[in-house]
Structures are given as structure tokens and as C-alpha cells.
Length: 156
Image 1 (cartoon, rainbow, N blue to C red):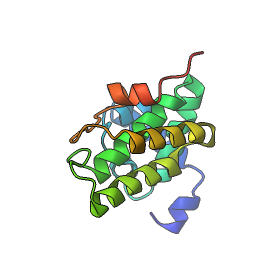
Image 2 (image 1 turned 135 degrees about the horizontal axis):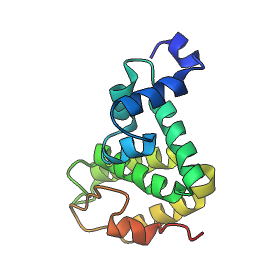
Image 3 (image 1 turned 90 degrees about the vertical axis):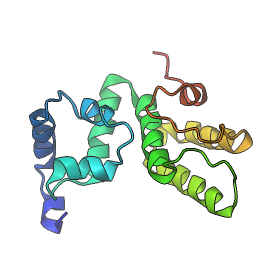
Image 4 (image 1 turned 90 degrees about the horizontal axis):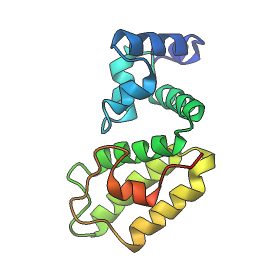
């Protein structure tokens, strides 16, 4: 994305216009239709070189806050990061290379986790280290049974 495009104050208008052009009522619906697609790929699909992954995530956070679905968004982002970093699922053998891949996926996920959910994210990471999921585990959406166990929705 060009520097000029990054400073453009109309990116939200373009973002939501492109989401509607693709037949979705919300950015969340657009993203959830592609649950394992990275934020970068979502931005590229919407962006035509003028939408960034951070802008897509910013829109997703705003929608999640309005609908009280931030925990679901956080789980969804973990799905995206695991899909990108561990395309074959959770490693069978946790050697140095695989340990790095898992750590990198979790670090990227934590970087996108809103401050309000960081303590919960730390608990999830600790639980995954203490009791790793079965080899090959690859969540395909935020409603994955293990993810729901590790980070259940808030009760309102």
C-alpha cells in the first residue's frame, strides 16, 4: 500500500463499500466466510493496494465490540494464525523447528489480541504448552471445540 493510501482518511468508506460489493452486510461476515484466510489475504482481496491488514483488523475489532463478540474474534484470529503458520495442523513432533513455528503463530496471534483479552490469551498459550492438542489438530473456524473450551464466549 502506498504511503498516500495509508494516510487516506476514506479507507473505511472504501473498505465497507468493497465488502458490500462482494455481497456481505458486514466485514465480519466477509471474514467469517474465509475463516482460515490471513488478514493480509483478506486485505488484498478487498484492497486493490489501498487497504491494509491492520485496517481490516481494526474494522473487525470495531464490529466485534459493537456486537459483544470480541472473544469470538480473538478465537477467529488464532485460527487464521495457526492456518498460516501450521498448514498441516499441530506438529506430530515438537522439535526446535516446530516449536519455533508454534511460538511464532502464537506470538502473531497475541500481537493482534485486544488488550482486554490479553490475559485470556496468555492462559490459552499456557494451556497449549502444558497440554498440547492432538497432532494434526487444525481448527477451521472460531467454533472449534477445543478453542471454545480454551476461550469460551463471554456471558452477557
